[in-house]
Length: 150
Ligand code: RB5
Image (cartoon, rainbow, N blue to C red):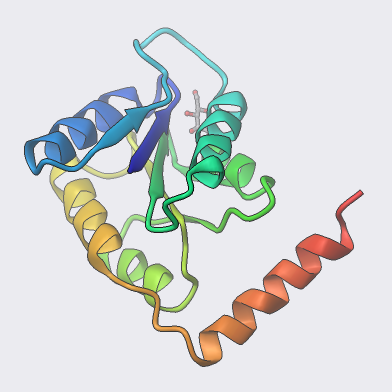
């Protein structure tokens, strides 16, 4: 399952991604927003990430869009267990899967065009985590998270 979320700044891009994935037969869950009306990105990030983490299928991933991709990625990364990467280039979208085991791709609907965004989506979804030494580094990130858990 691919979970999608966006604020008004990322709404159009989310819709394009949803159409792109659906056309490939990939199951999506749209966590909103559902129009171009102004809406805050943090609750959308929380809802989308919560649904992703509750999914028993550990192959599931999420894609979040806002105007820049930055605010929604900041919010997503506050959810324990989320590794959200804000990407606007192909190399980053590929290597954040290979090395960071990112489970959320964030993009800015006011930053990149739909064509590039869909390329980033495809490489993100089809690139596996490399593991090995990178697992140790991800564990270190989780350790920091645990230290600050109330
Ligand atoms: C909304 O205007 C905009 O601030 C938001 O979409 C995002 O870019 C924040 O990081």
